[in-house]
Length: 245
Length: 90
Image 1 (cartoon, rainbow over the protein chains, first blue to last red):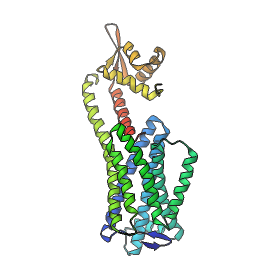
Image 2: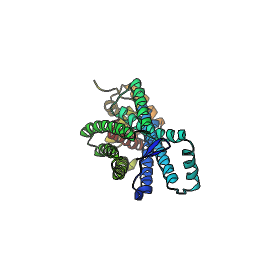
Image 3: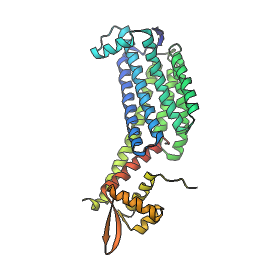
Image 4: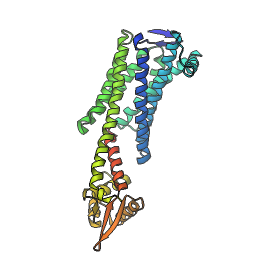
């Protein structure tokens, strides 16, 4: 673990440098896809919980993107790499002042935690706004302290994700849907792996790989529903073919 | 006590009832299957026809409601949303 402009920075093994960026991008794209789809459902059903659920995925996507930008900026700077001009401009801005760097890391951590916390709230059917704002404040503190104590972000994430996993496990016993419960189980395991970052760089690789697999399971769930429904509609469409004009 | 259905759920139940009857249903059957009062049923039927989800046809003086392609699309979309919601416990 290294200190960089007031923030603690953890390095992955050198061979993993660009791979982790690609993995993060996959996660971001999946989170955006799920957010957009859930927002589309909100447009159809007009139920608030779908709106909040979509915002949760957008927050995770934006938080992950900010973390990717901040980590890449530090990487370009410390290893004297020259990125493409556009990325270089962003990286230069991200590191232009201590306060921007610290706020960048904070925003990335806070938004990701806020997204998972919102999913926790919806999954557990909690409706108290007071509790939501209290927890948002607490995760803001956890996110801020993660600048000094890297551990605090991953521990908070692990606890929230474990809470979601438990709820989805109960849901799995009713619906039989394995993919979502596996995804949140993997997210939790990934965050637990990240807790060992200070001890070993391999923990970062293991955590990142498990993390992206968690997103892939969420995407699989999405596609299984889409594909299953498409097949279903084709069968039903044929049955009702006589109704076609 | 049964959960109160919202408008979209009522529309789904009505269209599903027609689909289960191989795409066409008599008004009396629809009334029975959709669990609505006659007045409300007529309001919904009017809206469904206006939106092109069902059509009305008369054979030998017997009125029937027919599910259209748009109606099938609605059922497909609604089912997809239901499966997605169930998977996340929404």
